[in-house]
Image 1 (cartoon, rainbow, N blue to C red):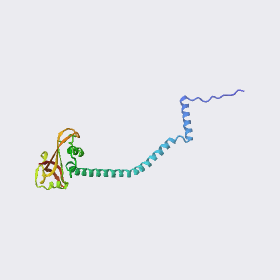
Image 2: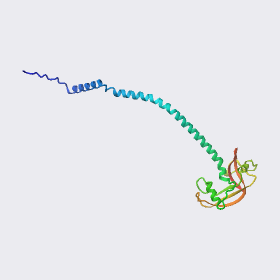
Image 3: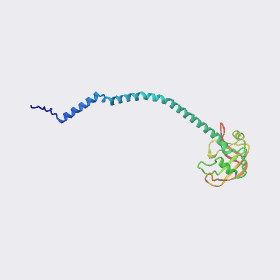
Image 4: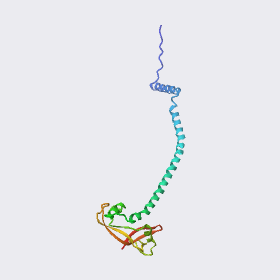
Length: 207
């Protein structure tokens, strides 16, 4: 008995490959694999849209706190600057009562008070006043006026009374703190610029 073998129809190679691809895609859809990527992207996008406003709301208290801290630090810095400016005059020139330093008074005080030029060199001359600060403040009530240093247009106040002071004159050294001074005890009037708060700067002294 003859068995008839029917030959399967032959398709062009490209058509057969395309058909196999279509069958594969169809099977993937039936297994619910195909929409997984697009569905995941959609869910992720929705999650981002939902999370973003929440994160912004969470950051608002932190931002407010940072602004408050910044303002407090700025105010504190200004207060410290004002206190430093007010204390500078007394720190630079007032030593009352006079420190009990039997030898090398000037060398000790210059280092202790950090007295130097802006470029870190030794000051050629400096003086310390041995008088109460409130008595030194009276210079701003003096009717005596003199020309200020550096040819400033305003006039400076010359104290009516003389104060006990120690004058330190540089005899050796150029770079701070390697500065060596000679001590001169004297009495003299002071020349100062003043503002509403009192003496702003003591410019010099006169014998």
